[in-house]
Length: 119
Image (cartoon, rainbow, N blue to C red; front, side, top):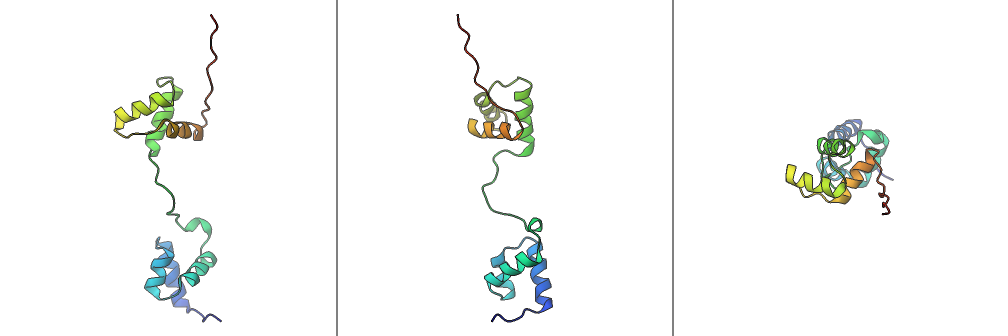
């Protein structure tokens, strides 16, 4: 049977978790097991208040994404490959055309295959 945690420790755990500390950091600082800190986190804090630090960082920031969408939608850039080349020259980042396509798709732009004209 796990021992009861005092209210002072509970409030300290909650403030550390709210400040963005990981379960491991809180566990090491307070001296409570990681399992117990994880259980307390799920009880004390709603899902939205815990900052998710996982995953890969985005290559494009929001400003760059909007710039690409604007240029493609106005017709200044014809396709994802030309947008990729433009961004490499403009900001110096090597961005794959697939990343550009994914960005355009999240902003509601869809791709289509051009019809061939018959001579």
